[in-house]
Length: 125
Length: 110
Image 1 (spheres, rainbow over the protein chains, first blue to last red):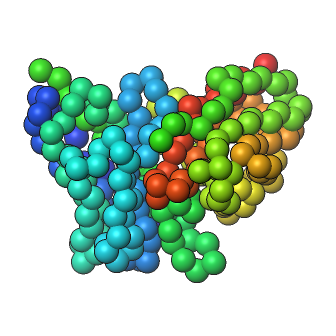
Image 2: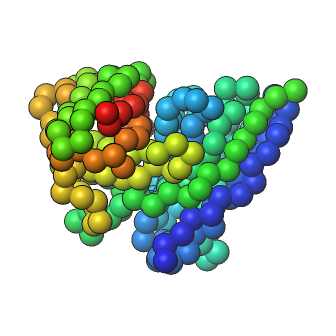
């Protein structure tokens, strides 16, 4: 069974840091681009970041560029999101998502077909 | 990057068809065929319903279909069922190599 399990969420003060992890299982991790998507309380979905299967290419929303860093360890089937200089507006449920394969390739903009259950990040003093 | 524009809510009776629109610009939705649609039930993770404008992932009912014309994409649900009641989000690739979501549409099955 294909599964994604996020961890690392919690309460952090403004300006602080947090590292989210996403453990993947049930598929050949390196073959798929991966994304992080967040949802603030009572709000809609917001794409945060994406990374190619090999980890060479990374992409960020303007709202997090320069503060967040996405990475992956394909030997451990793990996706990570390092979040620095956190702000109140970063408070959200953070989902990791596997990007779909189409025409034999997996690009982050194709679509996200498997999602984790989410981990909650709260930025507050 | 501004969010794509979706109606806040739509409704329909069981068995009817409804369409949810998603409007962007030539810099995102209008310029690429990388439009996806997601269904989200309360307190659940999103589920991919449509990718690349009109493709359905394996396991998604053929009652769900997608299309695009110019800067507007549409999700149509035919034969509306009670379990279709959920929030729906569109998303598109952009010229800035980012993804942008719509604000979401709450579907109510009357």
